Image (cartoon, rainbow, N blue to C red; front, side):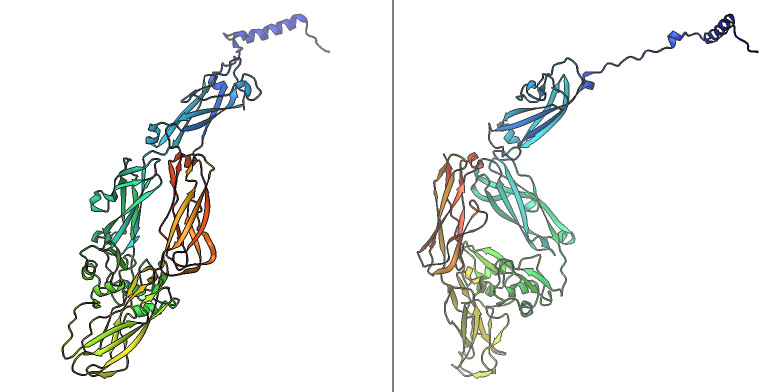
Length: 618
C-alpha cells in the first residue's frame, strides 16, 4: 500500500533543510559577489605609430637649404569616446591636413587611418659645421604619445677634408726596404680650401710629426685633390713582425683634421730557387728585373718566349723570372727594381748611383746620358759593382798597347716601336805592338747583358782593325724617351779594355696639343646644354696617323670617345676637330662654376696635356 506525505510532513522536511543551510555565520545575500567593469586609461584605449621620412640622396651643403621631413601618423587603436583628436608634435612644428580630410572624413582618427604631415627645416651654419642634422620627434593624439623617432641626416660641411693613403709596395720581406706612402687630400666640403699649407702627420713617418703636403699656397676646390708622398724604411723589428700598420691624418685649409687613413703592409716570404711571376712597373726592363730577383738575365729572357722583343716591356705585363736567388740577392717583390730620382743641380751619374747603390755607367746608359735639373731619371737598383764604364771618362790606354773602339749607328733617329737600328763596332789597335791572337769582344748592355764576340779570333797589328754589327729594336718604352744612348767597350783576354764609346739616338718628335672651347660659357639653370669643341693640333715634326684620335673627358662621358675620322693622318700644324655636349644638373647650381678636363690621344702620338674650359654660373 502506497504512503503519501501530508502537507504538514512536507513543511517539516523543508524546515529541516533550511535549518541545516543556516548553520554558518554568513547569509546567502552576502555570499553573492557583483563583478564590476574596470575603467581603462587613455593609454590603454589609444595607440598611434609615427614614421619619419627624408630624402638622404640630396647633398645638403648650403645655409638656408631646406631639408624636408615627412611624418606619417597611423592610428593603431582608438577606443576613446567623445574625445576629439588633438594631434600635436614634440621636436618639430609640421604642417598637417585637417583630420576631416583623411579616412572616413569625420573629426575622429579611427583605427587604420593615416595622416601625413610635412616639416621644412632650413639648414644652419652649425648644421654644416657639425656634419649632420638630428631630428627627434614624437607625435601625440588624445594626449597619448607615439613612439619617438630619431633621424640623423648627413650634411656637407662648408669646410671638410678627407684623406686616403696607399703603400707601394704593399709587401716587404726584410729590413732596409723602402716603402712609399702616397697621400691624397680631398676637399669634401662645399667651399674652396686655402690658399695655405696643407700637412700630413703619419705614425710611420718622423715620429708622427706633421710634414708639408702640396705647395705652401695650395687651394683645393670642392671635390679636387692634392697629393704628396712619404718614405719609410723597414726596420729589424719590422722584419720579425707579420705586418706594418700605420695611419695618417691631414690638416689645413681651415677645416677640421681628416679622419685617420690606415694602411697595413704585409711581410712576405721569398723562397730562393723558386720561379716567380713579376708584374712590370713603369720604367723597368727585363735584365734589370732579373738582377732585382738575383736571377740570371739570359735565363730570364729564355723564360719569356712570349715576348717578341725581350726589351719591349710595358707596365702591367707579367713576366716569368726563374730560379730567383741563383745569381745574387733577392730584392723583389717587396722592393722596387728601379728608383725614380729628381735631378738636382749638383748631381752627376756617379753621385746619383752612389746615393742608391747603383752602377754609374748603367745609370748613365739607362737615361741616355741626359741629366736635366728637375727631371726624373731611372736608377737601376742593386747594380753596384757591374763596372760599366762611363761615357766620356778618362780611361787610360797604354802608350804601346791599347784598343780604341768606335761605334756608329745605321741611323741616329727613330720614330716608332719595332724599328731596327744596326750598330757597327770598329775595334782598332791604337798601340805600337801586335795584339793577339785573341777573340775580341764587345760589351754593350743595350744589346746584351754579357759580352759577345766581334769578328773571328785574330791578331791586330798596330793600326789594324776588326769590325762587327749588332741590332737593336726600338721598344714602346723608347717611344716615351727623347733619346737612347748605348755604352760599349772592346776587350779581349789579357788585353786592357778600350775606353767606352757609344752612339746617341734621338726620337723624332711627335706631339699633339688639345684646346677646348665651350659654348656658352655661363649657365643659370639645370638642363642647359653646353657644347665643348675640341681641336687637336699636330705640334710635332712627324706626320701622325693614320689613326683614330680619341678624347677623354669624364665630365662629358665616362669613356673615351672618337674625334675625327677613323683613319685620319695629320701633318705638322694640321688639326682634327670634334664636339660633345654636357647638360647642367641640379648639383651644378650649388657651385659657382665647374671645369671640364680633357686629353687627346691617338696611335703614334703621346697623350696631350689636359685642357679644359671653366663654365661660370650667372
